[in-house]
Image (cartoon, rainbow, N blue to C red; front, side):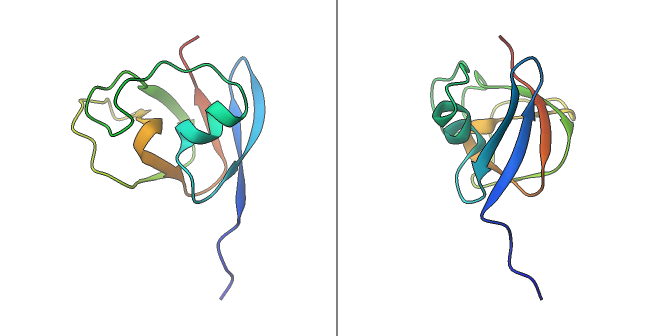
Length: 90
């Protein structure tokens, strides 16, 4: 059995690829890569960081309370389970 990767590639449309720690939220990875993303609560309550998930799969560390569509994620409270492609509102 193989261990999960320590870092995963996240392709951010209109920005480029970033490498994200597999154990940190996607919001944390975006901030570390200087990708501007709007947020407020960091816990899935407000939905301000709503981002389009184009490809890949995430796991929520906290169940989000904000409404999101089927093709959206809340980067503040999820981690990447595999390489992702996302579109952050710029």
